Length: 311
Image 1 (cartoon, rainbow, N blue to C red):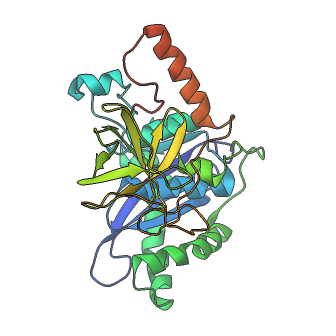
Image 2 (cartoon, rainbow, N blue to C red):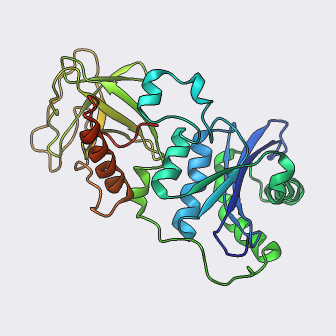
């Protein structure tokens, strides 16, 4: 590749990074044209959130890359269509349509599957370099937890790029402008579909949840309506239906959702501040995807709700 941002290689490496006898996993992305490391993230194991954090840091720092080169891990690519259920096929699941793959599609990033570790040699060589240099620097800095290590990585990545990155053959960047951090959060998240029960709650992670409006009042839905639950990287849980977003709060047994008297801002029954329902900007990638999917479903007279993310 000749341009910065034209293709990033993305991968993860389990290793005793903290020199304490325990394996943790470093997720990372490296630009193919320059060797610049665009993001690094420690997690306990290789996981979707680790890659979402890497992609988020990359996009907020540089913009949206043109393509991502990865192995065939199920985080990146779905099973063959023959292994998918009818519901998954109707929702558009298929090759490249995992939650990570769907996020790439919305962002306009082309996923490319490497056929062997040797095919993504640049990031494989990066792991060898970091297993020698980063491990020593973490030990010298007294870093002992993954959380401390993640805080250390930002400055380390800058020093690493100063030493090892090279200029691209073509000076024009291939990165395209990034959405805001808040808008990006709606894309880089875990998503699942749920049916609303008779008391306007949804079940998620073994608990019941209610959606609250900007005044802290429970949002009512018709029984059986399909909604989307989003787990954001910052820890919030959000309900999405037809372009409107409401933060979800857990329903305790026998508890009633009320707005405390005299509150200066909308709060839940637990006293937590309730944010205003989230509406993306008209030019947000999600909005364009929603309009495209809605139009397609009207033409096909499909019975499912008009929700953009089906992967």
